[in-house]
Amino acid sequence: MCSLFMLMATFCAQAAEAPVTGKKSVTLSHVFATLQTGQPDQNPENIAACRKQVSAPGSKYLGVVVTTSYSINAQSKIMTASSSLPSPVATQPLMLTVPLSPLGLSGEYAFGAFRPTVLPNTYVLFSIGLDFKGPKSSVLVLNSDKNYNCLVTSDPAPFKGALGTQLGKDQGR
Image 1 (cartoon, rainbow, N blue to C red):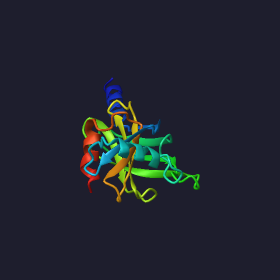
Image 2: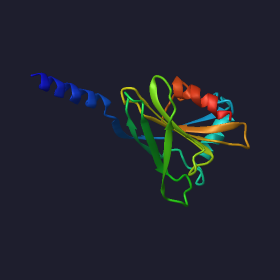
Image 3: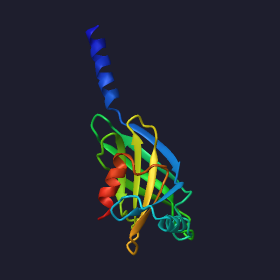
């Protein structure tokens, strides 16, 4: 009887430590202009310019599907993720994979890549709830020659929550 209990306890401990793996796909369907400080840019002209920019053949992000694969161990806090999306350049029809780093935010699992090699003028972000629901992906297109950046995202309210706060802190760099 005791050995059965020990076997069950060992199995349960191992099950609790098993990482949760998954793959989520979302469509980037919302466009926002953001100031270099990370705050929302309310200027309608900048928002319209962003919509045009992320729809252009050389920088097409609007309407693309981003698929993120992740492995999250809530016990050990070891987690990995990578996002795949079509190249934003229409003449290069290939899928790009961006490895993401955990951001260590409370209240959600969040990952990001800041100026990744395959998309050097962007930030690529992914977050999912602690219950592994509500996946969100975003691409922030950095504009060094303008006073605003362009955020294209699956999230209709990207400036709320922990990831939005972190985005505001990091964007000014």
